[in-house]
Amino acid sequence: MRPTWTEISLGNLRHNFDVVQRQVGSGVAVCVVVKADAYGHGALECARSLEDQGARWMGVTSLDEAVPLRDAGIQARILLMTGFIPGEEKEVVRLGLTPVVWESGQVERLEKAAVRSGISRFPVHLKLDTGLGRLGASSEQLSQLISDLRNSPNLDSYAMFFLTPKRG
Image 1: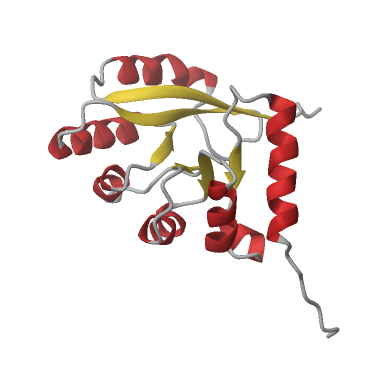
Image 2: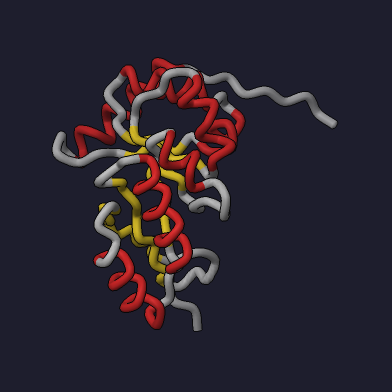
C-alpha cells in the first residue's frame, strides 16, 4: 500500500466557510457537516474552528457523533441527519440536539421526552424522501406525519428536503 496523508488547513476551512456564507447571505444559516469525524479530518477541531468563524449549525450522522461535540463545549445547533434510535430521545432532548424525524413513533417519543424534561418548544426537522429511498417520509406518510407534528405542542418542526434525480 502506498503511504497517504491528508493535511488540513483550518485557515482555509474558515475561509471556505466565509465564501459560502457570503454567497448565501447573512440571513441564511449554513450547516457545516462534520459527520464521520469530519470525513476523517477531525470533527472537534473542524467544529471548533467553524463555530469560532460563525457557523451556527453542525451536521452529524447520529447521537454518538454529537455527544463528543457537546462534551467539548460546542454550542452550535447540531442536526442529527439520520435521526435517532428508540431509547436515545431523552439524551437527544437533554443535549439540545435537532433530530430529523420521518415516522410517527419518532414524533411521539420526542414529544414525551420534551414533556418529561420540561421543554416547551423542542426543534425537529421533518425529513422527506424525494427519491433516494433511504430515509424520510414518503408522500403517502406525509399527511399523517404533519398531523402528528401539529398535535405535538412541545415540538417545533421544520421541513428538510433531499432532492435526488428521478430515475428511469
